[in-house]
Length: 299
Image 1 (tube, helix red, strand yellow):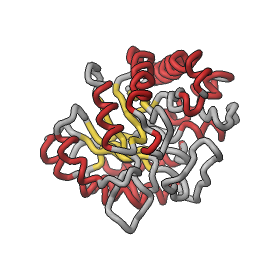
Image 2 (cartoon, one colour; image 1 turned 90 degrees about the vertical axis):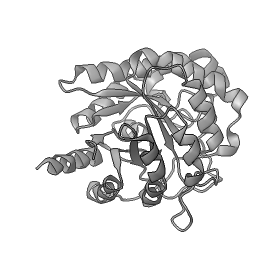
Image 3 (spheres, one colour; image 1 turned 30 degrees about the vertical axis):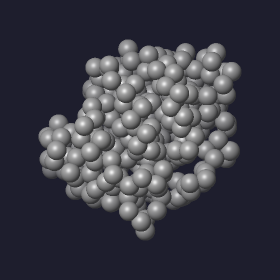
Image 4 (cartoon, one colour; image 1 turned 180 degrees about the horizontal axis):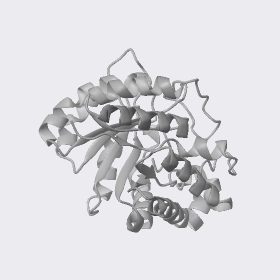
């Protein structure tokens, strides 16, 4: 089994927790604009907790959060600042910490119906160009459809950085593991095998739906070989339905303790997940608990 790597947690909620400027619709981008020192502090909290990968705070550097006019004026610049801050924080640490460049949904989270290829392409290209000099790997986050995955992969075709693709799952524990578009995870197998993916992850979904998705991806692991990785970074949200408007209100959280999260992580690891972290609402205490569990694996 490959060595376990610990990813960081959710930047938006951590920024809010430490008192950074934070409001809808700007979300985590407001700290980049008004008080970027908080972004460095949030990264540092995750590194201090043991995270081995930190993700750039570029998730909200898109028109969906900034609005079209502010995005046109500052979107690429803010993504560059986010990448610079993450790079600085990683380089200050005595142990090696990787920087993952975040490619968020360019036109809105959780809603595959909002994705329009022609509008998405220039946004993705701008985010890639702004962050590329500073990142070690790419994570395309919260992908909600096979089409969104295809378009994003095409935009990353020329990078020499390892590319990871993180899909958001429907928060439905009764049916088969499915993307928020309704497409099943097992319907992605052929396209994932043919892709440039270094790994596939599942993110920003409740922990309970992750196990079935990992099971469904076993054929991809077998076909891609030892260098291919699976990853999980679940959220601490209540279930999100298909009509959710990500910009309208803050999604409610649940009481998922660090110890509870580790119980889920142990199952994911048994099913082959070698990158585990957290998404929205999973904070430094959860990451520290994951790191302590990882240390116990070496004993």
